[in-house]
Length: 386
Image 1: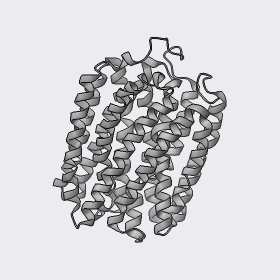
Image 2 (image 1 turned 60 degrees about the vertical axis):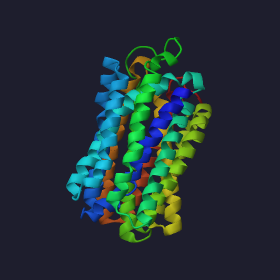
Image 3 (image 1 turned 180 degrees about the horizontal axis):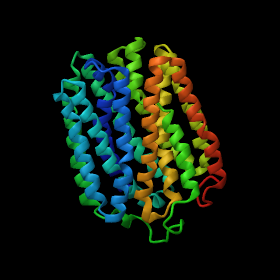
């Protein structure tokens, strides 16, 4: 638990930094004369690299066994990119840094998640382990946007807000180094019992599950586009947008903790129900007034909690222990490719019709439900909640 909490503290300050920035990227890019298509394309391409490159970093971690050096390199790139936004004055330069931040996340996530999985058996389940970590992660994602919202409410600029984020970025890097010194070999946290999944190949269940997760990703709008809509529609003022994002992250952190425990007990039933509910964010944020948009942002945050805790928690016991980093990397690579394609499609549809945008978000996510039902019936019997 100490190891999980320490990595949770690392993620708290990481999310404090980059989610604080991401809460206002839509309006920030708009202030630099970027169009809706540019916002969708930049953030979507960032997600594409942020997820797609994990295939390579996961394999690299498994092949070399150098989990900590790869993780540290990713955090350094990510934490350097966010405060640097304070120095740009064009959307093209901002786009480079936004994408670099996502690349940093791609480098560090697969080896970090593999190290977290080593602690799961002692803590009573993968859902609880990833849920605890994600809760700390998302509470950092709540406080970062609140700080940014406070700065903007006091008539500060976007550039000043990004500069302030240098402080949590520095704390993050100090904690990463502390974790490396305290736990140089996290694989020793796992018991020596053999893996319940034999062989080195990924199972059919893993691939089908990836297909369902890809559909969920494709229909899940990125927050910068939602924030862009709030600005264009006038439903939420600019100084409230970061506050909305903070609410979403608070809901995400709380739901991660609760849903992780429920997943360990009830299995895929939880994922199926939450997938159905999470899709309702679309009509609320794109059609609702201030109050309904706030509810939609909260449901969107709950969906993020599902994406970041339950979905990866289900992957860990599906694959051999010695290939977890590769499995996480491949899984999130496919997830990110479809997030990019979905983000581009949502950005394009938004320029044509809000009704089509909402329909795309709902139908695409609900299409994953039959796939998750199939996985729930045929998955490895060692998974919880059969």
